Picture (tube, rainbow, N blue to C red):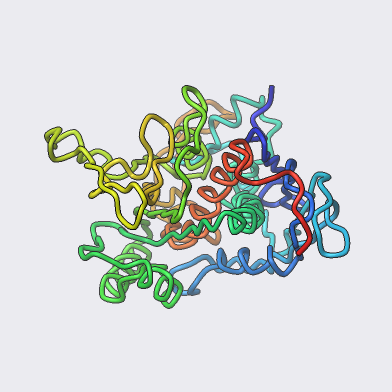
Length: 367
């Protein structure tokens, strides 16, 4: 088996490398009859682009999507949907110079061992954050599927470095403010402080990490296939497939370890004829099954490993200790660009489970 596909009823197979010809996504299992155009996909890809040249990479890719199959006259056909974006703004020279010097924090060494040195090492190759464009393409389709069952998916930055959002944000705050600043934070005051943290790290030749929160609203109760295809397990797996992710938590998350049962338990009530919980420490999932409350997942990203500070490494060709300075075009913080990726990944898993639970039919009726 290979590790390039994910999903059961709705599957994503992604292909391509950072400096290769293209990045692509093949989506299989999408219901026939879903209205879909390249503009739908492009709108999501555009949100992934750097919000600022000051705190983002100077690599400028158009990321123009091409749908090659699975759509005819504006509707999905039920056949696999193949989409690509072409890599255009590529500069590979610097990677030739450090081919045998694995960059600390990157997958250079592990990929070299896994594939016997045949891996594409340019720009991180298959292990670059560039592959997340495939996730965003898949997420664009998933979000359209989820509209059928009135599910909305949001994401926003809640922490960069040691700066955290320390006030409650409404869903409207998140909808309206997230993309009004380059760090994709719905709290304008915190956003300003986050920008400063990124700039300070960049000026020192360093980088910072942070946390993105994903939220899904109006999720029907009953999604999830315990035990090994539990909803939160599948979401966590998808999130860990985003390069640089080092932690995932739901609801109260790790704070639950310091709470008592009476503090952590979400008590039930009936409101407007619907069963709800009075708190949401579970993050919308119990026993691996959605309970109808908002799904809340937080995803921790490590600092960008490509930094210009001199670091110790090894020379794999000569088998001796060495030093390395990483040059190139890198984000001093990848968190802002990860916001639409987290949103896409959450949407994709929910769409897969919505189809598996027969909330979404295989063929959509024409309106």
